[in-house]
Image 1: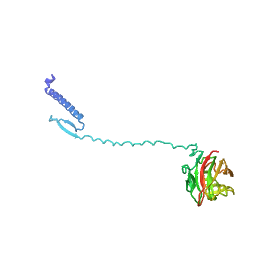
Image 2: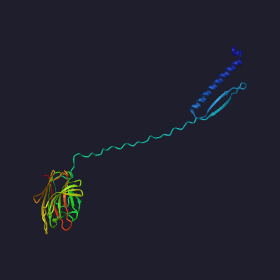
Image 3: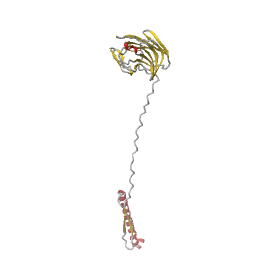
Image 4: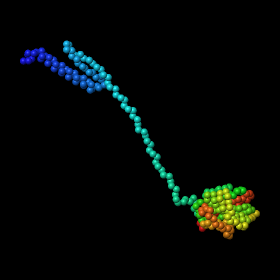
Amino acid sequence: MTERKYPILSLVNTALAIIGVVATVFSCLIAFIVLVNPTMAQRVIIEFYNPITPTPKVIVITQPAPTLPPLPTYTPYPTYALPPTYTPFPQPSLIPTFSLLLPFSDNFDNGVDSNWNITSGVWRTIDGRLVADPSNKPSEIIVGDENWENYVIELDVFSNSAAGFPIGVIVRSMNGKSLIFRTDCCNTDWILIDRESQQSIAHINQGGLDFTLSGFVKNRIRVEVIGQMFTGYIDGKQFLQVTDSTNPTGAVGIMSQTPHGNSLLFDNFVVTVP
């Protein structure tokens, strides 16, 4: 009844319903486009209705896509080298090591044994016998270990006209100090050596080397080192005995001093335990 009475009102209601449907479809289409391609410019459609002219006025506003900040630059973590493997230093052994054990012997048939240590002068062998070249200073050659304590030394000395010059048997040689049983044709003594200095601690006016003008004469020398007692023998006869506490241990050796002419020869050197 109302529609018949007011036909114009009915037409207005229908037109408004159609416009609502179109607006809804248009809004859905715009939303779909924005979701599918977000970087595309968004278009905002604002509808204005002119009260006189029913045609809507459309204003298009273009908005640029938002600029995103750059991603932070990746800095790699520093690489750490593994610490070096700890290798402990070897600890010194409390047990003494010996470079040469007793007994020791050398007949010099094959030259000078590698165990000998020449500390002064020039030493060589002649026909299986040890000899020091002539020198104004004592020539010394050492063998053994500084840990040697008690021992007996025996050797042959071949003397000639050079018997007026001394030879010596070195005992308890250690740290530049030693004792020497020294003899020649006329004197025998015990000499305490402290590096460059020397001191006679016992002496007799009797020599143990035979003097000869032709060839060589052999003399057998024996030195006993036991504790602080030192005893020297020549051809089985005790010549000189002394006590000394300078070195409790030490190596052994031979001393020779012939300034010119013939040299004295040494052979059959033996060191044994008493």
